Length: 52
Image (cartoon, rainbow, N blue to C red; front, side, top):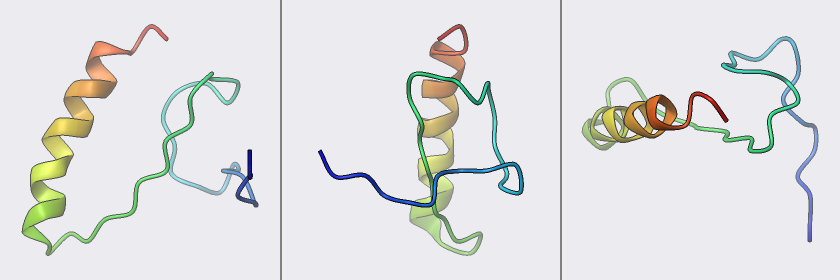
């Protein structure tokens, strides 16, 4: 499996523990209506998986 580098580091805006099993990198535009819609979907997923 290919890996993208560099990984998320301490300078990035991040939520959750550094050793989490899943790492999600999200790019968005504050003026984009689709990004605005995606915010609620991502937030719901994060809330549902907060313990993982």
